[in-house]
Image (cartoon, rainbow, N blue to C red; front, top):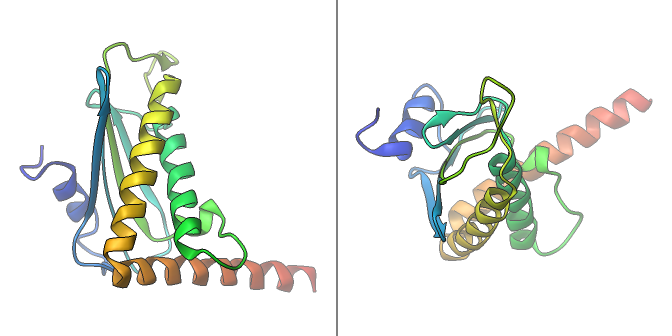
Length: 168
């Protein structure tokens, strides 16, 4: 339980890391009887930390809400970049800590352990919220947008250099 909700949870996870932007990016939205909230912050590390919940139940294997988040994040960063080759989803998520929390009336979990959410409508809800709100955030905060984009481009260049080295 975190008094500041998932924003504070992201701060707790990143407590031993150096954040690339001071404030956590927070997005939320709802549709009919479902809602989602996402908090994210980039740090100077290389690993991706993605923690998701459905009705406050941890979904360690992810599911539709994580799929929607990943797709929208990649689309938003590539849209913000505007020119050049597109950045892969893996590169967009390098050094990212994100918490995805969804609430819905009839959750459908895959497996007995409720480790993966199967509701496809959550993918579209999370996708639209993240794409719209993150695109707006990047336009309104160009300094943060440049830092995030540079992190993704650096990851892309490093991956490409490693691929060339393997080939040689």
